[in-house]
Length: 332
Image 1 (cartoon, rainbow, N blue to C red):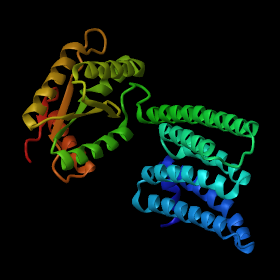
Image 2: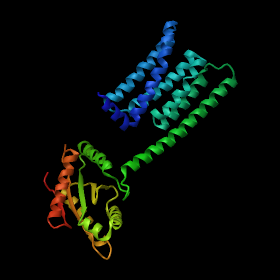
Image 3: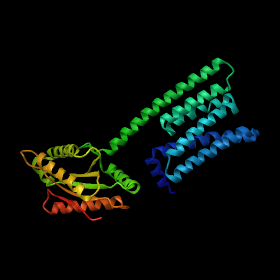
């Protein structure tokens, strides 16, 4: 795997990046202690350190090989919780120092609910089984500081997750119309392919282009043209079914992804959209705006670019056949 691929995966898979970063820190932090304990012939702590290092390396390696970073992250969070309890019994008070970073890291490895469950279980097991503490004040101090650390980590992780979701949505939305953009479209096309392969449910693709849109910009200005695009997007959203997905493909082109059984059903949906546009959309001064629509049904095993290309060809036929019409490719 070349460095460019590594950078790409780290930049596009947040969970993999976090798992790799935290795993690397843990291995770098624990390795010197493992060496020291081997020199001092402290074989039980040494075995524990080696077990932790090997398990972390295996989990990170699995994530890189398989592309699944969520399952090894969740597994390692539970493993870390178990080892935190073991450390307090094997190392005594020195083992508690490792609990704080371990439980805080879990809020970035696993879903917050799992991390919270692990933290509560670790605290309860240490207090119930009898740990390093010798008196009630020590136990109370340990419990309070651990709870505060966990709560702060929970709040921070929750806020960070909200911000990531906001950024993800912003990256997936068209700035002008507020509908999904081309980047989001490709992800949904891949999802439709997986649904067809797994469940046999078919999807149709509609590509819509506003007729003579350049004339609208030339006659009324780009500001009015943008307003027409916004109103067109709102009209489509209002006309579509709840589970249909609308995307702005670029310029005055929009794409609709819909679950249908056959080409005829896709044609009915497209005609409804064409008619609604002709009746309700204008560019000003009662100047009617129309749309041409091309569509096609996803074929089993078909790639996203090939599916889009077929819809684009159907749109081309609609525009060159007189505009304000629907062309649906009926072939399988």
